[in-house]
Length: 341
Image 1 (cartoon, rainbow, N blue to C red):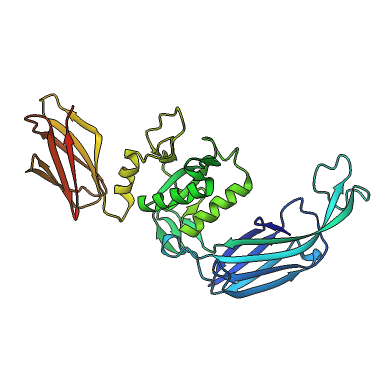
Image 2: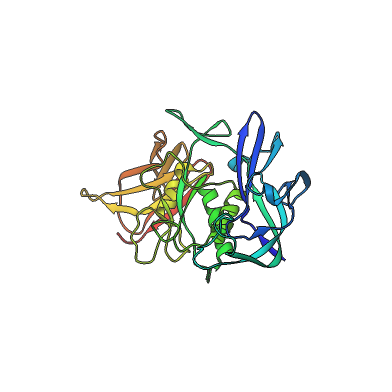
């Protein structure tokens, strides 16, 4: 049995109905029997909601209609249907100089059916609507959608961090905690070259189940943060180091900017001595107020500027080393001991 996940499905929402159109992959051979397509509720197939049979003559116009579909709604409700299909196809040998799929009117001797194969499909279906309203922004299922988008580079197939799927799942959980809701896949730095279609479909499936929009949106910042750095690359906006183990300071910047989880992160790279001999330190947080203590004594508190996760503390006194710093924000606290500047 040959199981596939590349049945083409396009959806259109209109007046509470979902209009679906199915398309067979190219170069699959001639359909010899009726193609059966089923749509089931839920990723595990809890209840059948559609069954259709399409003859070979209908293979170019296979459609379906779902009334009041359960919409995929991002992180709020990442609901997917399960699609199953099966059909019998003739395996084809093409004549010389045909270059792939043949139009039956082009030649009467270029193809011969040399065998038959039963093919099966099983894949998820997410039904939703994303569109842009001029001067208003992006809307997901008619609700305003504020994109928190990153570029994602697929990890190696196998590493000491596990298989690619295991690493992707771990990465997606980190991105959820960071507050990301849109992922744009990048292959090797300039696009998706070097990544095969099956890997891309698997990646998009994992994203849909976790609630991420995928692909390009029409409104996009000029410089998107990149999740995984490359060896030898000095990308200031990389969120994960090239070794795949260390989250960078930029990760915590965006987490403080986007996430609803409480964040308090002292940025150690910013700790430095000013010209006047005092210290400066930046702290990332999404809390309303951050308090800094120096050697156990209250030094200063700052309130958040709108949408800005950076709290910059300057003129921190340092009488001697080691220096003990502590920060509090909401129910969070963290302590630092500075032994060298």
